[in-house]
Image 1 (cartoon, rainbow, N blue to C red):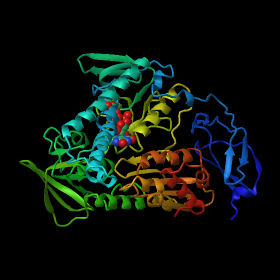
Image 2: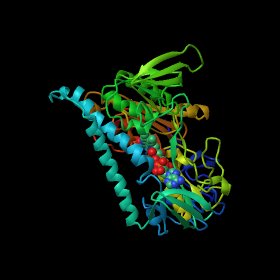
Image 3: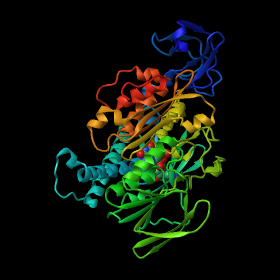
Amino acid sequence: MSRPSEKHTKKRVPGMVLTNTSLVKYNNSNNGEYVISGLPRSRRPPTASPTIRLIGIRVEFRPRGRTLVLPHVRVDGTVRPGRYRRRSGGGGQLGLKTACVEMRGALGGTCLNVGCIPSKALLNSSHHYHDAKHYFADHGISVGEVTMDVGKMLEAKAATVRGLTGGIEHLLKKHKVDYFRGRGSLSGPNGVSVALNDGGIESLETKNIIIATGSEVTPLPPVPVNNALGKIVDSTGALEIGKVPGKMAVIGGGVIGLEMGSVWNRLGSEVTVIEFMDRVCPAMDSELTKKFQATLKKQGFKFRMSTKVVKSEVVGDSVHITTEPSKGGDQTTEIYDIVLVATGRRPYTAGLGLENLGIQTDKLGRIDVDSHFRTAVPNIYAIGDCIDGPMLAHKAEEEGIAAVETIAGYAGHVNYDAIPGVIYTFPEVASVGKTEEELKAMNVQYNKGTFPFAANSRARANATGNSEGFVKVLADKTTDKILGVHIMGPNAGEMIAEGVLGMEYGAASEDLARTCHAHPTLSEAFKEACMDTYDKPIHF
Ligand SMILES: Cc1cc2nc3c(=O)[nH]c(=O)nc-3n(C[C@H](O)[C@H](O)[C@H](O)COP(=O)(O)OP(=O)(O)OC[C@H]3O[C@@H](n4cnc5c(N)ncnc54)[C@H](O)[C@@H]3O)c2cc1C
């Protein structure tokens, strides 16, 4: 079958206004539609600027595949390439005099202290334990009785956190960023007042302010959390459970609930997930999450779906949890040793004084910002969990960098179509771009290709449990441009980077299918899923 790209050799395209920085569609009257993309982000103008114009675009075609577009762009205005200057030191590295205000007493925010990193440390330790107990024998390894010292596991996690937060402090010093330990609030458009942890007030005068105050656990009124008591805990309390609970309820079948549930399930708890919806992680691709839920069930998870918790009571050493069907009906009460509330997080903006400056929040409490992360006060920016978008550390990081670049006069930009999401269970689950449900709702015609890890030689060589899952690729039916990638499998969290990169460069599934992948690797499953998307795979 001939693809549109094979019919043509070279085109000249007249100037156009770039209105969407990640994708421009050019409708050529003779030859149909070309997808023009691949513009490096540092050279992409900010979306809202009317002064930016693509002066000329040279379009070329790859001999054996889809369109390869090389935009040669000159930009009107003040935008300069800036991405190579981006580093984690943010404002400090761009030469801005910068101060950081943090009330926690340790740097690194939720992610390093009570989020991504400590949870992954526990997932790693519990995975080793589970492997040693259940799978080492398959490889001929005998280790005698396998036991878990939970205290030691928690100490290893704490050491990792200490090391990384200390590292951030070192980075701030290196980039000459002043660090104030205390609670900050806005004293005016150019002022931050810091109530220092050690007492006293520090007043800072500044040209620009970035609000990055993150999020907190959303309370679930029938189940009040008390981490100190350790019976009904949130994700922070779940990182400090000192003894493997016999029976654990996880309220909320989202990412955090399933990750923390996995830790304790592997260590021997009977984990029951109570979820209001009819499937876990409802925002993710449904084919993926159905398979994922079935896999967790095989691992021993129990699920009570379409169920809502209406009451809880701590009775001695136990917690009584009363539930009813989401749509109403008979109530049941069950008894657990520990209950984890993991029903979501909400932006944290308490005490900032937003209202005094007329900075608006939406009905979910997220700070309103424009496409350059500016609030209603133009020199005050907001990024991360306290604004709209997925609550993910890498999304917050991209926004932080983009905001600083904008302040420094560069072209800060975040491509929200290419932000991956990962669940670090075993197998891992990772996604980027659109789900099938979203494409159907948008009426987009797409091709779908899949490849199972059961047919991947490296997954098979890695043996037990490693060949669960599949890679699924969704691409535009006409242009073959990749629109979404969904993976369940070992190392899915690493493999998704290939999909993200492909999407950033506007790749077609055929581009990735024709890219040489080392053998034997799990990423060959990615290649084959791409082959299946535009044609057919070799090994299945
Ligand atoms: C258990 C758990 C696991 C997670 N795992 C992952 C994961 O694997 N991958 C991922 O991408 N994301 C994960 N997340 C989400 C991730 O942690 C957040 O998306 C990310 O930390 C948001 O970054 P942020 O900079 O917006 O806010 P935060 O990291 O929350 O940082 C905000 C900081 O501001 C401080 N602060 C708030 N108000 C003030 C004030 N007025 N004055 C001074 N300081 C203040 C807070 O103390 C906090 O340290 C996880 C979260 C949790 C809870």
